[in-house]
Length: 357
Image 1 (cartoon, rainbow, N blue to C red):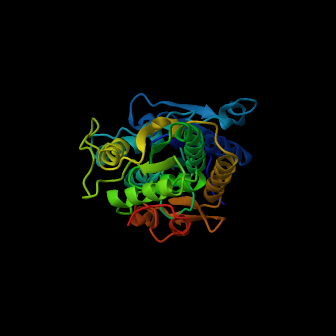
Image 2 (tube, rainbow, N blue to C red):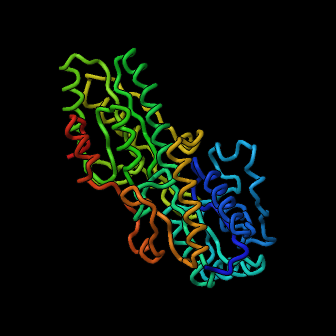
Image 3 (cartoon, helix red, strand yellow):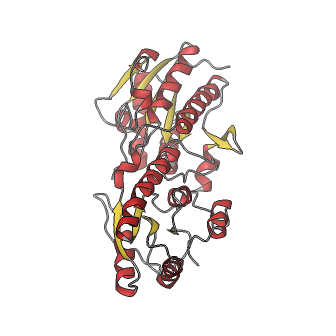
């Protein structure tokens, strides 16, 4: 067992549904050991900025309140990046942890957060356990991350809604979804939403391939179609649609839906196309039952690891079972893209969906 008495919990990176259920799980599980939990505001900023920004959390924060059922983060989360060196921020992070007297930190984040925050913790000598969350589902070594299932449901609901207007106007409607450079969200939503075409960053595509599929649909007598495009998809030549960057120079995805729409309209007259870009709607919505239960399970396991004296690990779901991996393994594995040979891709091809060459 361990002599832990105080822990911190923070959410880092983009928000998603299920974060509040994770925080609740960590707080409630820690209270069983008599630990005090400090909720760190706005990701790592709550510890690297001065004055420190935090609050002490107890089970009462989440008892008889809607928070565990809501998307977003009760504590706030930032993914804007920083311009200061990791060494400087790691020192301030460690100083903040020591100022609060924390024995360990639970970090809820995606693949980028696991990399950055684990580096902070390593350089500052801070004990950490990570919990994977992201709508992209690209955190390595875990089958599912908190927030992914809810985002899939939102995208699927959008496809259900788009089908009715597609049929009414005899159009091929394009849904552009998030996912950064990973196609998990697009692939799962396309399957669940019975799309005809799905384009993902991991698989090259051709305009002629899309046109062939649309013509096949037309010849079958159907007068509408659904196309799902992941925001990270590049052109046929492998080029980015946009070179836009954010305030710190990071690439901004988006625009591929309009690009595909314009190509189809210019080269094929069988269908008119229109584009819907869900954007940040995909991060919202009440978390699904799956995401709620996943959040509770992973949050409780993170606390159990600390109670057993294990640190510098990320909890995960592998083959349906809860496990954990060292943060070194997680960082070394890198971003987990969609496997082009996965069962999901094979199933898509088997039912006649066009997903690339």
